[in-house]
Image (tube, rainbow, N blue to C red):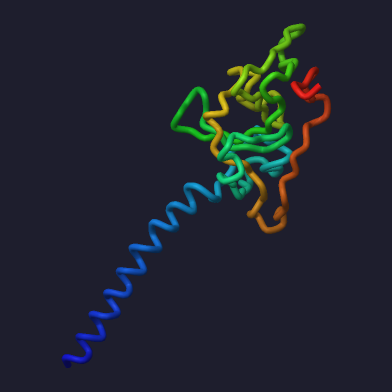
Length: 175
């Protein structure tokens, strides 16, 4: 009887040690390296959720890649909504600081993206609440870079960083 209590106590201690090490490691990994998220809505169609409301894509979000606020034109990123800090949105980076962009819906107005900001848009114009509505977004709101579609299985793929046709900046800071 005493041996079984000793064995149970050792197992319980080993479990507790493993648990108290594994949980902080897992939380840190999910907070700082990668996590998964379900994409809702039609603003990123056809790149994400091409089936509309019938299905939701699940994407891999890479926090580590944006830790120094390094994004490229064409990247699909997750960010904190500038209008509702409780909500995260997913959009494509169209322009970076110093770029000049022609917003959709403004006839002859050009916008120069300020330092420390980016211009983001959904791929489904007219169905997206994006920089055309709220202007350039601070890089400080950047959450993660969407790298892969994980679900549904038939859509499993790497997300490419490409600009949609006719949405390139008029002038880039690199020119």
